[in-house]
Amino acid sequence: FQAVMQEHLSQPCVSQDGQAVQLMLNADAGSVEQLMSQDGVSGVGLYRTEALFMASDRFPSEQQQRRHYHFMLEQAKGKPVVIRTLDVGGDKPLPYMPIREDNPFLGWRGIRLCLDHPELFIGQLRAMLSANADFDNLKILIPMVARLDEIHQCQRLMHQALAELVEELDRPLPIPQLGIMIEVPAALMQLPKWLEQVDFVSVGSNDLTQYILAVDRNNERVGQQFDSYHPAVVQALAQVADSCKNHSFSLCGELAGETQGALMLLALGYRELSMNGPSLGPIHYLVRNLDLLQLADLKQGLLDARDSHEVRQLLHNHLHQSG
Ligand code: PEP
Ligand code: MG
Image (spheres, rainbow, N blue to C red):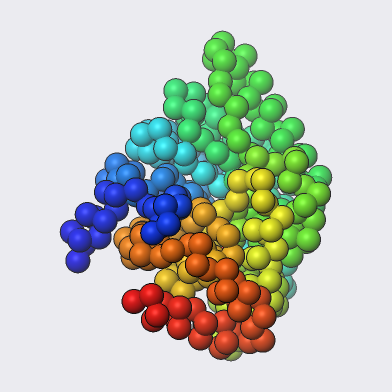
């Protein structure tokens, strides 16, 4: 089975009607070299840096971080690598930085924590920017953005880090693209006004679902209600695609790696999906067997659906009909 999937991935990911779909890998550490050498895999769409911070017993130094980022950028062999800045807090605690809060998911997490500790944040940015010096395939992604001034602060700090390094290393450095995650409803609503200020956006459907439905994604009592096929989430996903007509956008939540989820996203207009390694083969197979021009009716059906059962039924039927 693995061999068959690898064989598929060596082909470019193009639909029946000739549309290219970028399939990207969600990674946290370790080797990605084999997948990056496949024509059907377009790069790393989400490198979660928190794994590196959580595996350590103190904040990793700038040099340690640079080694990890360098390894990842090098393995991608010229394909883009989206490295996300530290996204701890919420469900991802750091053992050496305990945070006690009544509502951790509404608390000090992601970019909020980083902007309150600019010394940490600048260190991470410097590690990324210097690792990228000889590759120029880095894209930087900011998690949990909820306000425009957070974007501005990140831009300012990135340029400060760049200026420091250019001076210290006495050489020019590539300026990476800077993008934001759409995972807080406020960012979704403000997106049309923000688009001119960011280079790309990536939807975090795990958190976006959690915050739209007000369901803790890790709480077993309400776990059943965490549902990315809820019509409100479908509307939100469609809204991002419609807002981003002339901008680069992708999705990197779990939804992208599910067969029904990927079909839904393709119907809504997504052409860039980032997922865990084991999903790449099956989703590649799905895309190559779909005619994307034929998905307009499905899209309308999804937007009209009244509950997630109806959404899933439509997706199920479409998959069944197209074999
Ligand atoms: C998401 O929220 O969908 C996402 C990709 O980020 P994480 O799961 O790491 O919070
Ligand atoms: Mg998230």
